[in-house]
Length: 104
Image (cartoon, rainbow, N blue to C red; front, top):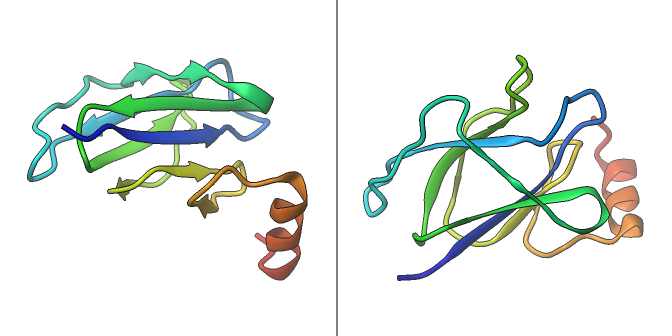
């Protein structure tokens, strides 16, 4: 089975380590109970979670009332603290350029 990895950089106003809550897709029947599974700390303020699946439905949250919208992914991705997805680890300059082109 393919391993799906998602990365998340939490917003500065979120508390603690973020959670990822997930529910079934057509090929991945697993689900979590709210608020979900704690994510693992990674480098440079990123957090990571790996699914034993090729696709997943999920939402990130801090367990204290803050959460993202619902997401579906079928490939590795990085969601930054401005709510933008990247298909590879973005550099600080890439994130700044994207933010300048599409401010939130």
